[in-house]
Image (cartoon, rainbow, N blue to C red; front, top):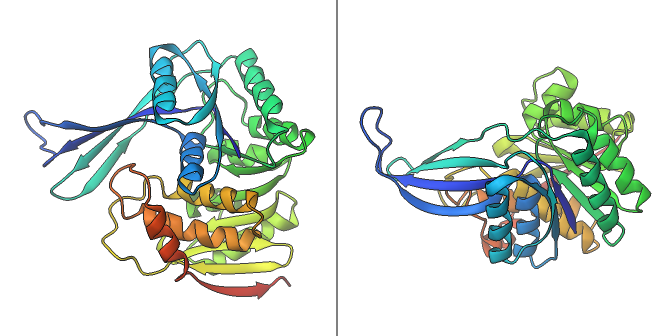
Length: 314
């Protein structure tokens, strides 16, 4: 499994008892880790006993720290040097309320030649991997259709692209078409100019994506209701199982879901079965505070409780 992260982060997680509006807030450092969509997906694949390599940008002192953190964690990665500084993100975890506050800056601005270097690095590595995951936002300086160029490079290498992004980067990629597209309800709404309130709405969005050739497999998530996984055969609703504890944070749930889908597709599962584990991993991620990784044992136990319902395409 190969992943691409164009706008990674160093995630700083601080813990406070109570976030006071006046005076100093005394905090302790809970964790420091490399982050960003594709890096998180690669980490999740490894937690599910798979193998992954993360291609990512790295710039300045923060970029050097990002590389060191990945090396220390044992994540296989390929860094593409950029001139501007890699971003840092801050997560504040309030222990009394058990709420997390995720504060993320926009990140660096890439030059045209740096974007081309990313494409070249991806193309060199993609041929050895059946699936490539491109996940996360685009940094400034890259055109909105940059993921369309990624899709072309991946297809030319004989691999399949799994895409998880948002905003103009999402709509810009769909002109090229991808193998699998994962959207949450907000991202799906941006594609159709209609609210995604339930699984029926998600099914309609997926049908649109399949019909227009934007994706061969469409996965739209609808929060606590679950997700709809759609292929040429039909639409499958996947309902979130009951959680064995209080949900603490949705940070990382989407990346965990994509990691599970990618891992199981690489292992030979069909998209619906892969998505069922994805729903379970996303649910397991909700049980961990801030950006802490999901528990694989909890995820596999929840997988057995994911209910499905199939709809034939009309």
